Amino acid sequence: MGQRLSCRASYEHGLFTAVQAGDLEKIHSLLERHPSLLHQATVYDRHSALHVAAAHGRIEVLSWILDRSVHPDILNRHKQTPLMLAAMHGKISCVEKLLQSGANILMFDSLNGRTCLHYAAYYGHSDCLQAILAAAQMTPVADSWGFARFVNVRDGKGATPLHLAARQRRSDCVHILLDRGALVCASTGGYGFLGSSPLHLAARGGSLDCVRELLAWGADRLQRDSSGRIPYMVALKYKHGACAALLNPSSAEPLVWPSPLKFISELNPEAKVLLERALIEANGEREKSILKGMACSLPSPSYSDVSVDDNMSEDSDTELCCICFDQMCTIEVRDCGHQMCAHCTLALCCHNKPNPTTSSLSAPVCPFCRSSISQLVVARVKVESDTDKEMSPSKLRRLRRSRNLSEGSSSFKGSSAVGSFGKVGGRSSGRVATESTGWVDKP
Image (cartoon, rainbow, N blue to C red; front, side, top):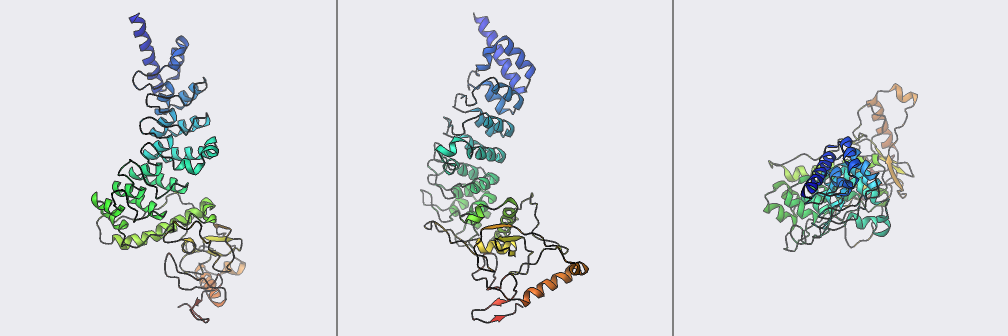
């Protein structure tokens, strides 16, 4: 009897070793002799073969096991699913396969009451995070729970995926979660210090990139945890000087991504990249003045995968922005067709501090014709005429600017979020509108 048990244990060990190594031939051989091994689990952690395959990224083995009607939500000792282990270890191919096989994204483990979304955010696997969020929009979860509720799902200690990503310095995951509707000022329960916001946790972890992201999405620098501390005090306590400088309530307010605006939420990827870069550059200038002279001063991050260049060369056919006369027109307003640079578009849309008591923001209008903005897209490059082709790029640009200065248009009223625009003319005007009814030429 004892020898039979010992042989069975040996076969089980051999199966899990083969699964871990991805040896399908050996797995076939073992299961032909002992088919019931497929439903066995490891002695202590109660990992199934599916758990082992998911954790080690053995996609061929995992697919083979799923084809044999093994349930994708089988639980181990800690009530963790294979999807949780795949998300924990960043095995994106296994995550995608499990999701396709109907794995439940709303399962909670018994360790900390966390879902697969918590695991992906905590361990910083942004590709797994995006796959789970995409699945959440197409599964019954979207109908039963609602997508916004799932993005802000709390674990057993009251932490959302955003809290975990901010504490673990996962700036990419922080950005993804905020872009999908994570609450930037949500307070924790027992995770970290009671009542901590994501900004408190980012300050504690000392991640300047996470602090930047949270501030750019409207995180409140004056929000207090249950001990009465603001994020600035937390950063000082843990000796994160650069974070403390940005979080100091006496320093300049950062620009905030205008996510409540409908046309901002509907931006196409190319236009979104341009405006996000403009926001980074604008807040980067603010950082330079705040961190000036500090040894910990760091350059603002930039996106490496930008496919559209906002700073056009001298040979570009794109028109110079008629608002700032500094950048090229890269954003077009629909439906009127007027164009301006990304920085001026951001100045039009951005707000310095969101008002939590305001349910909706008044949408800005086109600064040139005062019509409603239905959409923002990347500006189309205009084809030069035969006359323009004969001119040098620099001469053509001077001609366009002089032509802009000679025509009249409506005024762009309001202060700039990027720089001092004053009161500037419309799309076809480079004149500056004074407080009186007269016009003066821009020097």
